[in-house]
Image 1 (cartoon, helix red, strand yellow):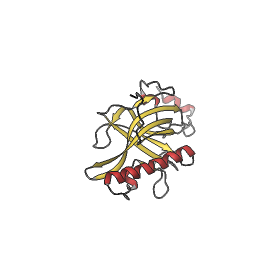
Image 2 (cartoon, rainbow, N blue to C red; image 1 turned 90 degrees about the vertical axis):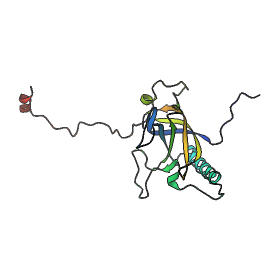
Image 3 (tube, rainbow, N blue to C red; image 1 turned 135 degrees about the vertical axis):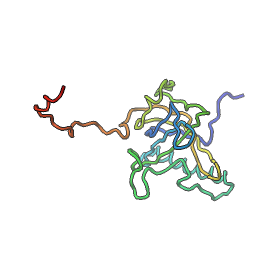
Image 4 (spheres, rainbow, N blue to C red; image 1 turned 180 degrees about the vertical axis):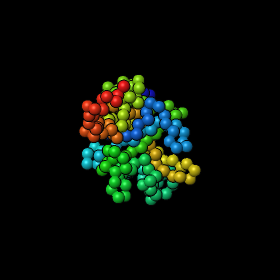
Length: 193
């Protein structure tokens, strides 16, 4: 009897992806939804490894959608998959860091518990919300699956494991600069008490 766990054929490990919108240590409700652990992972289609991962997910999404709908030629609409382009129809980046990228959104219900979050050496992180920030680089294990919720058929991703790889420029936090601060004249000091 083998003690080795077989790999799930619907799982993929994304490598050196940029982390975006992370809620990994504390679940967050979006809109009227239930609290969930969530994250998005940015992949650069110019990078060969990322290009291969994007293609695998597109093929797997088509396969799972066809199996789920029981229609051999069925494919999910672009807005019904967890994998999306980082630019809108006019070519404008959706968010900071998304320009020219592909974004994979993954989630895990509060009931399932937090995804495993580890450092570069595989050691569990005590406070993933402090270490894993928007803009850092991570490896992530996700699992794609078909979902039919209230008649909305889609391909979603389950968030399994996130591993910190290296620091990156934080999203949405440009470098602070004092260049636009006003000069203070000597005469203004008198009014301070």
